[in-house]
Image (tube, rainbow, N blue to C red; front, top):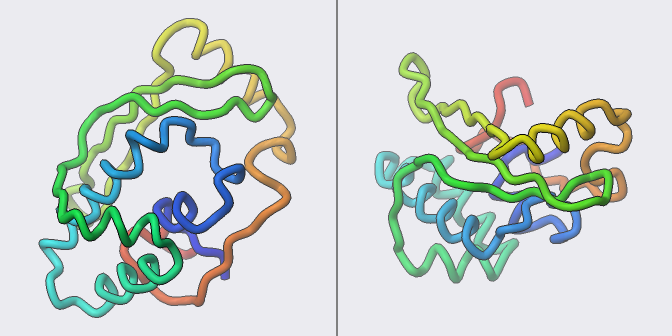
Length: 152
């Protein structure tokens, strides 16, 4: 089964497999946001197991987790490599809570300006086989963990 957790992919898969280009800013923030959510699940086996597995798989994650930084989700700029090869796509990332499903968030990425909107339109018009990293897959043991997509 393929691991579908964004943190797993960002920390465990090869950096070239991720389109995220502002990793230095985003990864510490994402780990701090995970720690904030983890605080609501102290002692829960799935959460503990996920953090242990990710720590074992990624020394970078383990170092960031050990800082004990805490942050809440919020809007911020995320920068992605254009899969078509020319430039980067800048977006405003906005997270919305789904009140009927605790710990579920919907994240909307909005292009920052007309240039980013045009680039996104070109990317979306590209054949699906040109999206993502076709050369690599990150597999992990099956099991329900924080951040997994339903049915995944």
